[in-house]
Image (cartoon, rainbow, N blue to C red; front, top):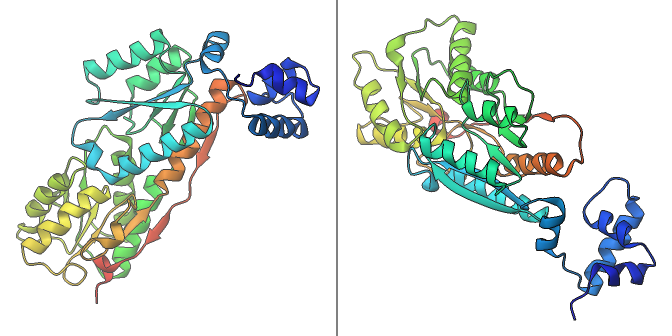
Length: 338
């Protein structure tokens, strides 16, 4: 016969209520007691009844995430690492991860969030690729539905988030390029409504200003966060009558396309052209040449977001957490090739 919660309680000479609260992470259970319960449950082979828990607490034990389908995102290493972190951390807390796709801002995306919320198909959601004014934040906050975000919109709501200070760290990329003697530094961005573009573009502009360099609108091009977008943007920049000597990209996928275009056009990356990215996605050290970038711990950020969301869902923490993550400038051969 399967081991029940009553069996665990009798084995420890504790009440069923105490064992249940210990297994469900309630803070009113002493840590020593919690560890005894967890150890006994493991030794006895107790498996929580998921269906009963859902009926009792009205939880689905599921976290939702909508992957933007504006481009082939499943092939983007950023999203591969991000979803891996979400999934692994969800399982660690006894939750499942539900991932679907929809174009950002589309009717399909709006319908998915409404279905999740009103049907209680998920207990909370993770958001990224934030817009400056983000309807998702407005909708979820107004409905008091648990959510966490990577970066923050400008909407006047308080909510849990992880931030990376893209403005500051993109400024460090510009500092690095200027230190190498570059004065014509281009920027390849993306949709100006995206928060990551606004932050990183502000870092680009601030970096130029800090070093007394004139802003040239000809050196600013819009991409779409894909390598194809970076490839075409680079060709536009590198065919200018007075082309840049350095190109700072909004993300690593863009930078990979720039590397390809530059090499195809006969530029020697790291010598007569410097290229930088932002994200530190897996494999950036294995591009040809290895890519200088701002390395953010994507997997760890995703895990932290899930932990924060679970704390909201289970009521383990009052108020909202606001976490600032420190990043790392990784200098490689794409800017200082030999």
